[in-house]
Image (cartoon, rainbow, N blue to C red; front, side, top):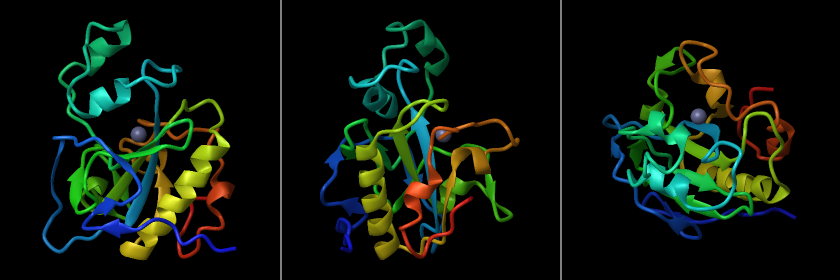
Length: 189
Ligand SMILES: [Zn+2]
């Protein structure tokens, strides 16, 4: 049975929760999303649930709430999508805009991947497995993005971050084989 995915309208996924982040700007003129970048995040690291990730992406995180958060103070970052441990998908930035997720990066000789990519954060840690529900939502989301934009490939943050080795996410627990049924997409297998 083929899953048609979700509908994307004017840069927004119809079926996603929304939590608007101010951390975005315009993509360069005439640049469309060509790359999906998979990340993982949990706040504090290793803790799932709660709203701290949402707070981080909306500049609301209380830096005093946890020792780890001191290093996040003043950080302005975002993602297009977050998929939590239950597979619930939240959109923070329109796909038409540039979210701030990749940092210094390069893919196929093109630097600054934020310009031409869609960022997807999975709630999780780099050293452990992800939930079945997360892969279900991720596949659906990737199919929707492919149907709407000229997506050529899907990579991990670890594959594009500069200098090489700066990022490990989504990490060894992420199973790229789970995306193999998503057609028309090149995976870093
Ligand atoms: Zn990342």
